[in-house]
Length: 199
Image (cartoon, rainbow, N blue to C red; front, side, top):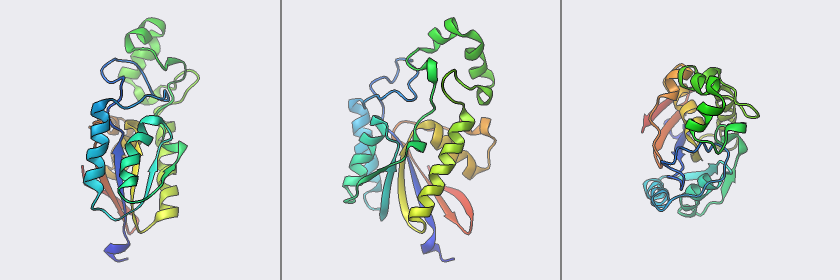
C-alpha cells in the first residue's frame, strides 16, 4: 500500500462551550459555543485549511456542528452527521454539577472518580459504550472515505477512546489523555496499523 493511500483522520474536539467552568455535567445537552469556542473553531478551520479533506464528519450536538461548520466551509463540503460521535450520555445526571451528584448519589460520584470505566449512569451509558460507538463511527468513515483525509469533530469521550486505541492504552489510561477544547489530533491508518502522528 502506498503512503498516498493511507487514511488520515483529524480528530477535532469542539470549541469551548457557554457552560465551560460552570461544573455542569453536559454530555448530551445541546450547549452553544462561547465566544472563545467560536474563535477556537475558526482556528481549527485555519489549521486544516491546507489539508485535502474529503469529508467533515461531526457529532449532531450543536457545539460539534458549530465547530465543524467553518472547517467544512473552507473546503466546500457539507458536514456529515453521525450520532455515534456524541458525547457520553449521563442520563439522570445531565445538568447537575458534580457537587449535586455527590449529594444525590454519593456512590456513583465516588465510583466516577475512582473506577470511571465501571460506571453506567442511570438512564444513560458508560465509557465502554462511548468507546464502542467511537470505533463504530471511525469504521464507518473508513468505509466511506478510506484512503482520504477526513476531519472528525466530536467530544472528549469519543476522541480519547480513539487516541487511546491508536496509542495502545488501557481504557483508564486513555481517559487521562489531554483533549482541550478546539484541539486537533491526527491519526493515520496504513497497512491496518493506526498511529497518532500529531497532537
